[in-house]
Image (cartoon, rainbow, N blue to C red):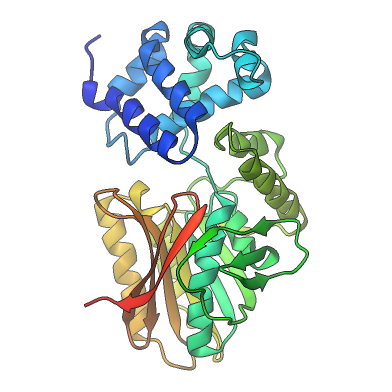
Length: 349
């Protein structure tokens, strides 16, 4: 087997990112995993022959989640002990896991990532507050790439957005990102309907699904895990409405039907575009623009995008509003929503 250094180097790159995001534990897992990858021939072959862009596919994050899932299952014991902080022998623990659990790791990595990061709801809600301040109307939400649909429940969460309270007071899901810059406008966001789409939607009523979502949370960030668990519990009481379909076909069906007068339709997505082909990204963008051309002040359209820049240098929050068609970068954000740097929304030149 020959080395694909470009692919395997993704682990080192993601380790640097994880460390910068405040997760030295995950960085060490990835670095040790790369050092001992040869101990797991199925996993090594999967990584070295990956057909697409390993960064876009979040290959390193799939590997990290597979290892976390094993530790949560208590196997092998050496790995479980590492995650319980009973020792710091990353090399020994990862070596043991790769030798004994090669098939499990390779199988896990073939499945798409499922982070469904609840903290990103703060950025999405902030954008909706800007749209609400503009139009003064309730919303109907359409989400692309919903995963388990936890962000479709954003109206059920409580927020502190730069000192501005929002959402549902007293919610078990408390979201308070570190905020830089001016606060968003104090506009009420009333959600009348919310539905989403995913090729492989997750049902949080299923125990294996809950475990998969929790395994994608960095093991040294317990606050994220607790917030996710609370959002999962809430979703079991308020099940999100998610269609199993491809995003472009579903979006076309939704947008061809105009909303009722007095509603703002909002299409939103977070960390989804990287998983679409270039053709599908263009098709989705064209569909939204075409719907925007039909929008009126009585039936406006908002498009909220929380995505990496093309060179993956930063995550930007963009809002486009129709009928004017004005596009504004509202903020630069932490990839998992831990902080938001609010720019005040300069219009695109």
